[in-house]
Image: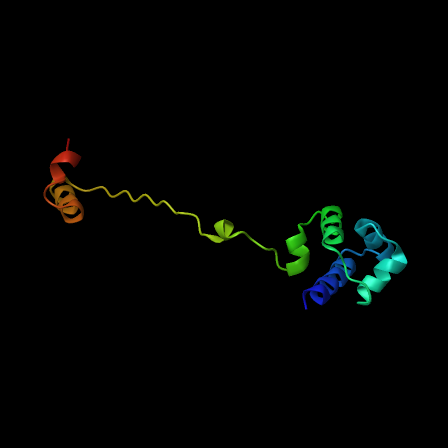
Length: 113
């Protein structure tokens, strides 16, 4: 269940960042006893509280949900285009052969101008 996963992730964050339950309760905008109930699964954590926690932890709410993984937008996941430039020194006759091989006979005149 998602709520249980979020609570488990908050426990990990608390441990890794050496934060107390009181601090997280303050971040969530609730009392320490209420936050204890959240951690024990007796009370549900609201989305508003997750957002507040994320803000105070310098995270995004989605990153609390997916912790320790960081959610990346699909556009961020696409590899960047790589541009490669290859320079080869050739004599004129070899250059013409290579250009003909790459571009065909029709384009060789344009490239030689």
